[in-house]
Length: 112
Length: 276
Image 1 (cartoon, each protein chain N blue to C red):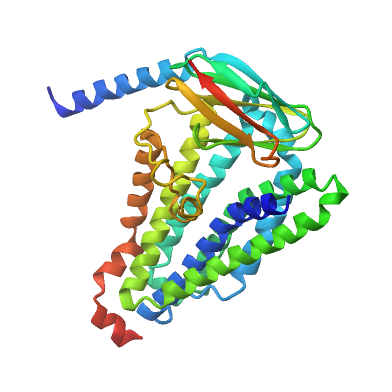
Image 2: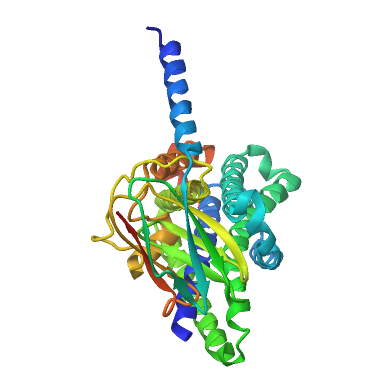
């Protein structure tokens, strides 16, 4: 097989894998911030699936969702909502916290 | 509150402080190698800080709207666009600064200086906007005024001192190796930007998930002091994905194959010494 054909086929392969992963429907979960606390503070999600995490900040003050384990970081302005995609996660616990109020805003995502 | 502020502000400004130091040391070493070459003057730093901080105010002001763009992933898209622009400007810098015409053309010299100023100010916009958002929220309670102000001042002090220490370490490196090490740090900085940009696009689901390549969080946690320093300087991640590592290497290679880097290897130490 000539090299350009190999390249072409692998490109098609890559694109289709990309499309499948990029546009696969992801399950949605919700996390609320109220008085610098996360509700629920323990969020159970299915393992090995991409998750669309909707975070609603009910406080007037902004917060920053941060997790070293999940490799995620995002500012959420006061009284607004945002979306973060996470996973697919291996089964286990993933700690997250609010960087602006780290003493109170703590929680974890439990992937089962 | 005080300690939280110190940590948060320091995390944000450390990267900017370190990269300004690398550029200052690089320009100085490059001057030793090619006297009469690129001279940006000293105004570019205050200009970059001014543009960066005012840009950060505007960005912070519109952040609630930007958050809602592209189905609530607007922040990721805008932030990654800023980082990609930084890489492009960095490449422009590495290509233009070696041009022979630069010595005779003040206009070209000015263009390179603008390029440098812009790339540093873009970095500042993203980092400082987060500090502004944080301060706006936390200062809604007047009790927090003095701990936040004091914490920020101390963080700025530590950040600036780290930058100054790095600068003196870099300019004291001998001969061509000084320039080479500055350029390697610049390449790793580009890698850091590319890796962060790809991470943001993965977070926004604009780029696909790829497997985690390693997990060194037990060995060197990202939240440790060393982890934070390495994150600011070379983009250390304890658990990066395959895609992040690929774009990191790609961006590093782009800088390592640029004329400025190649030039620093074409010269030998004898030439550098005779020039200086």
